[in-house]
Image (cartoon, rainbow, N blue to C red; front, side, top):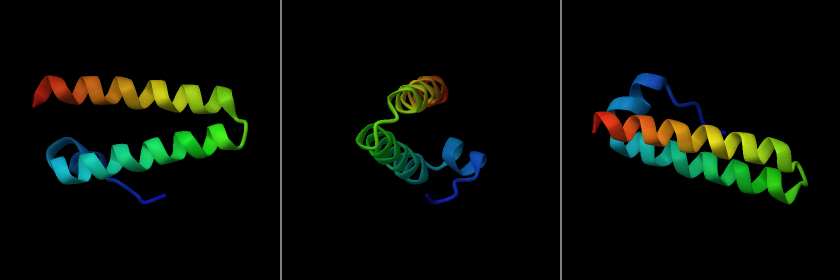
Length: 57
């Protein structure tokens, strides 16, 4: 997985989009491997982060 500096994710919408796309791919990979609890936790964290970032847009 690619590294995404927090400041870039907050301020650069292209980086943010790539971050969430990579995160969603990771969640799907976890699901495919049967790691349901981890996938749900990561998905919930992504959702929370996305909602918080939408507040500052």
